[in-house]
Image (cartoon, rainbow, N blue to C red; front, side, top):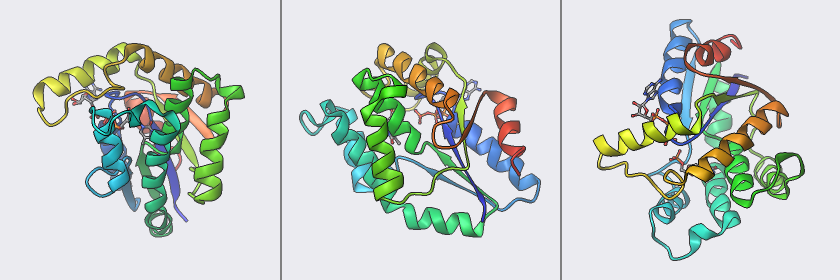
Length: 210
Ligand SMILES: Nc1ncnc2c1ncn2[C@@H]1O[C@H](COP(=O)(O)OP(=O)(O)OP(=O)(O)O)[C@@H](O)[C@H]1O
Ligand SMILES: Cc1cn([C@H]2C[C@H](O)[C@@H](COP(=O)(O)O)O2)c(=O)[nH]c1=O
């Protein structure tokens, strides 16, 4: 059974970039490695609905923290069998966002402290309990603060017309609250062990698990 690692962090932090580097470094060491990216845009109707809501469609859907979290959770639930099969067939499975994204963004949106958050418990009961998604062996918080991540997201939007900033990405207060929520999840080693690192240290932290 391979190791399941979730890479977490803010919008624009560089998760996709670091996942690519970890994937390449693991393959270089001969590890059978694969990646999943959540939300699964273009593959999952619930993921697409969530994205459309974050870009202004579907009325007041995005105002509901629980409705948005449910869409993201249903997307992951539909990928559960593939995820479990990937863990059986590989040494390392890397997820670009996973269940902790739902915990961090939902708690931040509701202003709930992580240690007493009802929505964080609801997310873990729903996704790990009811949907039986595998608990990651390790979770990495990409240590890129809100002002840097927001600048990267804006830069990407300026150069890529297909990636305009969404409702969450343009909200600086939300990004700060999400980063604080992630930091608390990592400090508490929520659901499994966490590391909090950036750049080469983030790559090394995951590769050291092999
Ligand atoms: N270490 C870095 N230094 C500077 N720019 C970076 C770095 N890593 C990524 N970027 C740039 O920042 C932007 C966002 O990176 P990336 O798409 O990897 O982030 P992400 O966390 O996956 O974003 P999202 O969650 O919004 O999909 C891209 O334009 C990317 O080229
Ligand atoms: C998977 C997932 C995502 N979110 C949030 C995080 C982002 O702001 C948006 C879209 O994700 P992307 O990586 O920028 O494409 O949705 C969330 O709240 N819960 C989740 O499970």
